[in-house]
Length: 355
Image 1: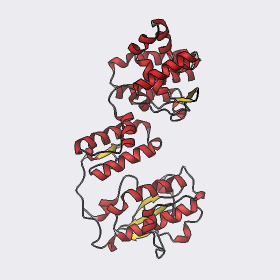
Image 2 (image 1 turned 135 degrees about the vertical axis):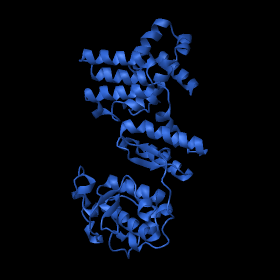
Image 3 (image 1 turned 180 degrees about the vertical axis):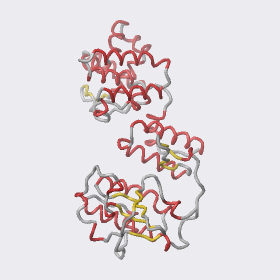
Image 4 (image 1 turned 90 degrees about the horizontal axis):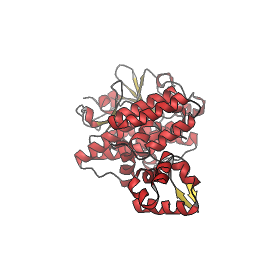
């Protein structure tokens, strides 16, 4: 396998281009955010790898501050183990220039390899010497965290370092990942970590678990209530949600999440994912509080804690009468906020006992 094959990944842009000088990076803000990668100028990438045929593999997008921040993060994580020194210097130099243009900081790794002698962002692969990484064998599908519907394989996880890198990337950038891919990514990273006996950082592992679990989450009822509130004037839609929720016992969680995604898109609720409505996959598999907490006498209370208590009927009936419990479970968040202070305090105590 050539060096070219070993460094190209699914995030790269393949085009015919020309080297870009340092002075061309200037005003990155002028580029359209919605432009397709193939239509972007070469200055929108920190590195251009020129093949023997004249085509260009463009790596590390830097057209916006968000692109630059992600390229800076990815370069810092993997460049020293995957790029030969000449290529590393070019990428670091133009990532640093982009960071300056966008007004964001760099990292120690970027600063270490940025070279003021580098004049353009192109590297001819034919000139890469023996310092290039050794050829790698083609990875199996299960060595990637994600395989898209079109068969594109993304985020390799075939080594301990890459598993940890993928886990950290998922936690830090989950909102930029298509919701329907989040469960697959989290599940594959978790399984690979278990197979390879890789110890993932606690905060990364806890976040992965929110999407990787194969069981229904304890915030699903809350997520359904959110949707019903948003569609309260649409009787057919709310009845459909009730029916879907009732059918969950006979459905695999993955199928339920797909059905809920279809419902959301049909009713325009996908515009509110990760803002005021939990996305279908997070709602089905885990549930991460994304709203401001409810404050009770100075104590922050998150809805996943309230939902977890609402699902524990046995504990609730030890402290409240059955009619109260049945009514509370219909809409835990709203009903919790309406409770008298003594009842709220009692529920707070029960939530702490469950932690």
